[in-house]
Length: 259
Image (tube, rainbow, N blue to C red):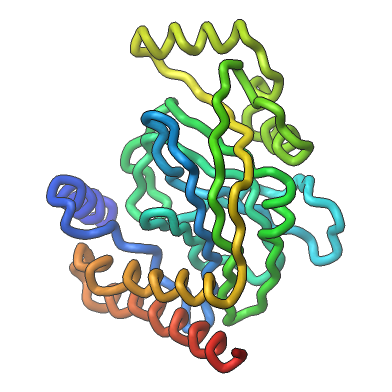
């Protein structure tokens, strides 16, 4: 019944475009959020990602090529991505996913397609995202603008070591460029078929200062406001979702006090 209810709400929201799908309910007042802003400069019909992949590092790791599990953001609005109820620790962002996958905000897939693109972040960006936080804290991994290079090859174009490493983990057959493979993919696309692609994006802008973080969490408050949860019919659950606003306010207050 619970899944039916959220499925119905999701369909209503998709058709009316009047509200965002509700975010995951916090585990408590000390729940954590990882936040990051990622914008990919568009070429033709290449939209912004649907999710960002994070990896939790060990505290003493001094390399960024990790074999840790990929953790996908579970809520987003525009170019702001959130990993809700993240366990405390040290995290990096390594890639972003673009596809026709739609979820209900709780990780339950409503619709998905194999026509996926993974944007692999360059090493200098991965290093810059490196952020550690404790229980009850929320983490801002930064604001980034990325360039999507013109790629007439199948696979990564001019990748660095981080992009090759994580591509081999997520899409092993896309790590090596091939002009022939590109032709095959083009023919598949023209024929209406499906396929996956991998892109080695380039870092154009990065920002992680207090101003950028304040702007990020101020904007986040709108994403977790009443307009984002009006699809939730259960008052108790709606009240729990509003706890995110208290958690964000706490962080904004601390940033202000530290200035």
